[in-house]
Structure formats: structure tokens, C-alpha cells
Length: 316
Image: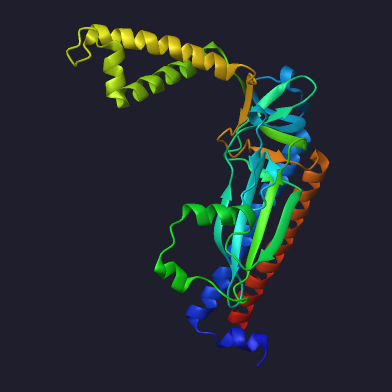
């Protein structure tokens, strides 16, 4: 029986199921084609600026990735020093690989060019990196992460009896990194801290100090209960607030010392995507255009399949 005959003899439910699947694939491919083309054009049309001359708002920057405060992260799977990581652990099933764990870092890092530095908050960013490693093993966690897991997780008899043993249980590890001193291209919402931001941050620091003092009631009473009645009255609490304010100002100044006055983060708008890439600008544009071409091809194939199925069904 030919494919055409099979289409004709499908039940109504089966036919509409396959037709709707083809239509959904075509619509999804069209959406991604439009999305990738829009990203490529946005990168091409947005002018690149330098950090100390950037205006407030959506900007495009080039520079070098550096760890925050000079303290690089340790990649959980490989243990390599990095500014940012993303990993995935997959387990081999009967027919395919199944993801059992995935994670990405959300700790800020620095971008530096010849004019200044800018703190990058990677939360919500679309990250593209050329530093991607894939390897295989027989354990759930390789290297340093396996040791950490064994140290932190309590092992029960049930775990021992049901643990994966033998060579048939294969795992695949995928790790993507942004390494220190790597050239970096970013697009996002640029902001310079102003006096309002400083006041807000100082107030948050003071509130955190007071919260910690409240948790240690004995120390709070010993320090501020002047009449020794076991109660912090309104006047004594005011003294505590003044002391916390002075301590908070000092702590905030120390934390701010050497910190970049600029920050780049997610705009929260789909029309202004947050992009971080270790690929040069032109290579990133080329990648998005290639993905758009693949999506357009899938759109025409799925669309043509749906039209052919519908026409065959009507003529049959």
C-alpha cells in the first residue's frame, strides 16, 4: 500500500491528528524563523558603544569577561575556573538520552573594556558560548561534583540496593563555560547607579543588620537594654537603629569599594532581548541566520506535507 493509499484509508481521528501535527510544526518553524531573523537584524542595527560613554537604556557592548571581585566560580562538573557555567547530565535510556539534571549559574561577573567596567547579571540572558564540552561516564556525577554529592547526601540502604551499577548505565555530561579573560559580546539594559540606588541599597543593608540583631536577642539586650529590665523600649530601639545605620553605612562603603558603577541586566521585554556571547558579533549573526534558514526549511516541508495530506484526503 502506497503512502497516498494509507492517507486515504486513515480514520478521521488519525487523519486530523497527523494534519494538526504538520500544521503545528509549520507554525512553530515560522515563529522561530521570524525570531532568529529578528535577532540577527537587531544585532546588525544596534551600534556598539563603550562602557563609560554608554547611555542609560538598551545598549550593545564588547569587552573581556572577568570574575566578580577577582574570585572565579568553579564549574560543578569539570572543576574549571570560570565566570559563568551551564551544565546538563543525561542518562542513556532504552532508545534515547534523558536529562536527569541541568543547571546554570546566576552569579554576576564583570565586563571590562578600555574605558571602564560593568557588572553583568546573567539571569534571564540568552547565553551563547564556544566553550562547550561533552563527555561520557558511568557515574551520575563526574569529578569534583561526584565528591561533593557523596559528601552532602546521606546514603541509605535503599540507595545502596537501587544504585546504578555496571557498564550499561551510561551518562553524558555537557558543560558550557565563559572563561576569565574571554572576549565577550553583550546586549542588554544598561544602568548606572545613582544616589537613589545608593540610598535604597544602604537602607536594605541596615534592615538586614537589624534583622540579624533581632534573631540574637541576648546580644541585643546586652548592647542596648540600658535600664536592664529585659525589654528594648522605644528610646533604646532608636539607639539600636542609629547604631545599625552607622554600621550599615560602613559595610555598604566597604562593599562598594572597587565595585563597577555600571550594571547590565535583562530588560524584561521580548523586543529587547538580553544576549551574552563569546562569539564575535558577526559570527553570532551568522549563527542566527543559519538557524532561521533551517526553521524556514522546516516550515515549507511541514506546510507542504499538510497541504498534500489535505488534498490527498479530499481527492480520495
